[in-house]
Length: 352
Ligand code: SF4
Image 1 (tube, rainbow, N blue to C red):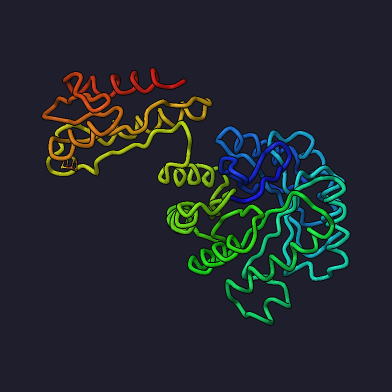
Image 2: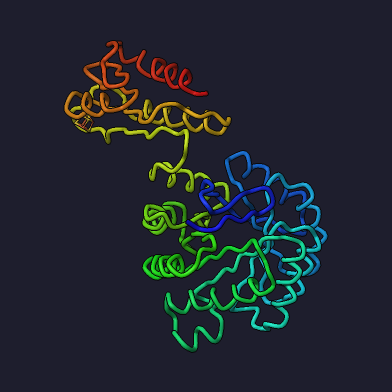
């Protein structure tokens, strides 16, 4: 169990539900466009947003974003400690600093004291591409070096009595990311933000992230996640939801089991499965909790009845017909055209 911290109004770690975050790809100096993107992301289920702060000229934009954002805002800081201090003054709920490119530790101490005084959150974000010079010299480009970088930096913030700290250890190499997170988790109880950096384009990046995040989340490691994709950030939120769904880590969302279809399929199953998924997404986005553990959409009598009867709700297709199952029992047979409406009706009835 990690210790619990807060980032604005969002609780992180210490048994709080996993938090999904993303990063705007708008210019922070363009507060209007950035706020519009943050609102879209919030509607999709993003809970924390990070924005770049590349220069002092973007600080007024950041101040407006922090004042109007529906989500806690983390300013991403590199190279210049003044940017971190300005971000905190501008109202950023958190800052992300990178040990490798803020090597002047006296300046980092100033940032730590300001964050402690204002009770803001600091993410120590270690990337394999930018390790602290001392850790890199001692351990080379390894998971050990990433953890040493994080611990070295954390000490500065702990000494300044910062109470809201979290850490990320990102490498584009899956094995190194996983090893670094495991090592850190065994040595520290500060919450961990998980992500596979530069994971790639939507399909490849989602798969890579799902593997890396999935391994760690199944071990109980990780308090916040980001699926980094070479795509609009909206796609990151959808992918994050899908990963958590597959791991059964989204309370109130049933698992959807659907057969891949084959030469035995006698109903047009793919649109039924897609429509069921869309309806679950819609209800979840509307803040509903669906009181069903598993929904099965199966094409035929081979695995169909078995899977459908193991689910809280399901269909098993036949030749132009199908059987609806509820809590393990067949409740009725109906023509193919009535299967989807019947399923959707049951799902809506189970949404509270
Ligand atoms: S459940 Fe039936 S239709 Fe679906 S893949 Fe299996 S055998 Fe094919």
